[in-house]
Length: 176
Image 1 (cartoon, rainbow, N blue to C red):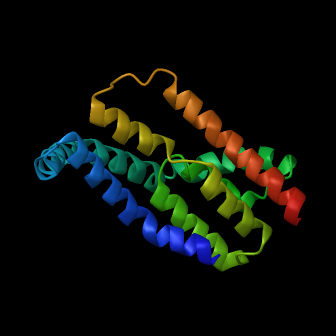
Image 2: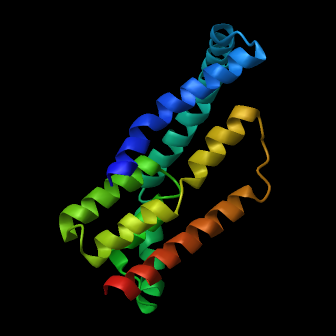
């Protein structure tokens, strides 16, 4: 454990030192390159603001309209039939949509059932094995101007589903 702590404390300073040495060796002006990169990053961030606002508004409408609860109610009988705890189902639906929303639901599950409960363990495993597919598509595709995602959404949601099912199976096998 002490080795991991030492590596984690020195990883970033060593990486920066290696970059500076490499830049000096290649005769690259590091400060000008850094400033140019900062300008590009700021421009991309400003371009993403309308896309992020649109995504957050759509998410708020989805939750506040009751559509989220309706969707959970429709899926719940099928998931309970196959033995998936119904308490983690809202998290499975929220996770591809919003990372912060999913984190809030995970915290709520932890407070209600405890971190060592099956629900808490499944929620924790889901946080690590799934991703915020809609956020990723919005930010990454929006930053490079991709308008048609083609199969990326389908593949992302299928991978989230696989992560959810795997989290449930592993946690039930290991902890139930």
